Structure formats: C-alpha cells, structure tokens
Image 1 (cartoon, one colour):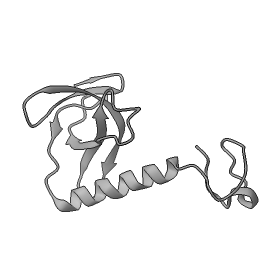
Image 2 (cartoon, rainbow, N blue to C red):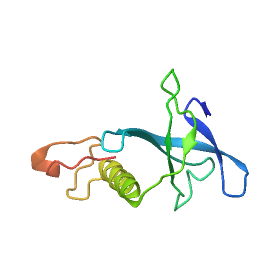
Image 3 (cartoon, helix red, strand yellow):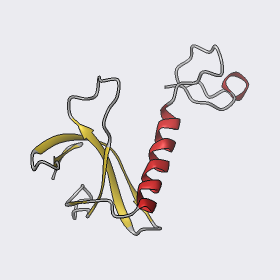
Image 4 (tube, helix red, strand yellow):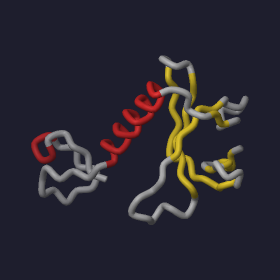
Length: 114
C-alpha cells in the first residue's frame, strides 16, 4: 500500500507502521522488484533502520504487496545496492572545494558532493 512516497508495513508484532520509501529497484537475476524503506520519524536520527522487501508492482507501477526476502543471495544483492546508493550520497572529502555538486576531476577526483 503506497501513498506518494510512503507505504504501510506490517511488522513482526502485527502492527502497521507508516514508512518512507528510500528507493526501489528491479533485479534481472532474481526476476523481482525490491523496495527499501524506513519508519517515518527516523529521518533525523543518527541511525535509521532500513527495511527491505520484494514486491509485486501494481498496474500503475507503485509498490503493491510486500514479500519477505527469501535467500541470503537476495540479501547480498540488497546490501550491495544499498552500499552503492550510500556511496553516491557520500560527501566528497577528497578536496577542499566548497562547491555543492562539484564534479571537476582536477578538484574532486571524480567524487560527488552531497
């Protein structure tokens, strides 16, 4: 169930939790779609609990029914994808540049700023 960039997740205790969607991606290897999300209200916390599930897309492309991740190989794929996502979001610490979005190879060696 999705509302804009949110979904309702039923936790292990059977409680419905409103969550913000971090991102979705498809895997050709597993022939599944995946969604990574976190409970609303954790955005400003130092550590955010990121949850993952596979899902069946609805006709309009939004997240439909959620399914548990079934294998360690799927968890590895999710972790690798999340690591790549976080790497893209990391602030460049390789230079002293104050320019947001600077991608000058001489300045930042190809790293991207937040």
